Length: 192
Length: 192
Image 1 (cartoon, rainbow over the protein chains, first blue to last red):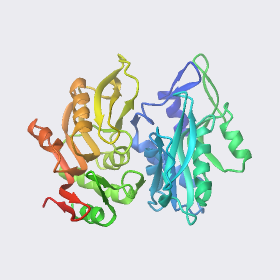
Image 2 (cartoon, each protein chain N blue to C red):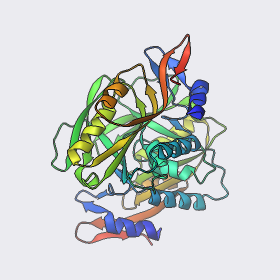
Image 3 (tube, chains in turn green, cyan):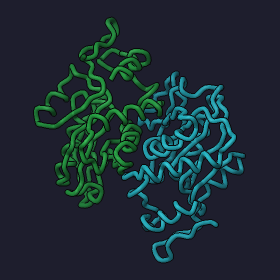
Image 4 (tube, rainbow over the protein chains, first blue to last red):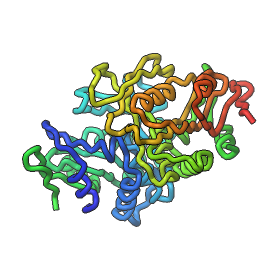
């Protein structure tokens, strides 16, 4: 998506360790108008698909998930919660997600009542890199018996393995910008 | 706000310990259409005020903050981040917020570049009870030298002291539903 790639080139910051900072417009300060356009683009890509609910993970997926829901008949958004407790509650679906940012595992939960076999779920998140968060979300959907329509990702780090692994499992993933390589010296190269 | 009070009566759950669960429409599953109406109502109440930025706190303030921003010329939303680290970075404003839900203090940070003396800030959050989160947000705004326009809260627990303390400090707080009392036996009584 040209508009998004331009914005990443302009305002994204490449830091050592393959970190791309987009906190001025996506995940600390939020450009509400941009997110609206991203939501519209997800809807264009998934046109004709029935989506009854959007599932994301706190915190930085929430804004783009809500922006996207506007284009799917304002369907409900559910955000999976990170939980420090390892208690297994009967009321929740639960999975584990490894955060490379914080070098630790999180338990991630969704109350069972919000994901049902009747639901058609679109997953939305800001980043896809190693695929741990997205894989966790697919696991929650699987546990619930809901139908997984696919995933919409703002930025995929194409040089990490998450996208390939999950597509090989048969999941449809639509990433609005896929980065093939990035470095502080050479900048960002997008997949064309 | 009648519509909101009706929804809280219908779908909110009062639990022992003065807990009001609204996770089916506000802070786990999100009713995007309802939040849109809440955002419109905040804009009506703050009509004529200049707002250049909306500040909230992760996670459950993000969705309503973004919905509200749509009615303030799609101004940027900034969400303060909870940080487990107590490291003081020169790049961030930092304050401490006590969470009664988790019985612990969080460090809450905002990158300095996103709050400037030129900004007119509207604070948005889902709940106001003891006032710790909202007080922390006012502290961040104060540190930045930005102008604080006021706060917009979805649900205020009027029987807890946060609202009174902060209004006495001179802050304008607009709460869309104020609960005077609630119990599992007698249900919820709203301030009229």
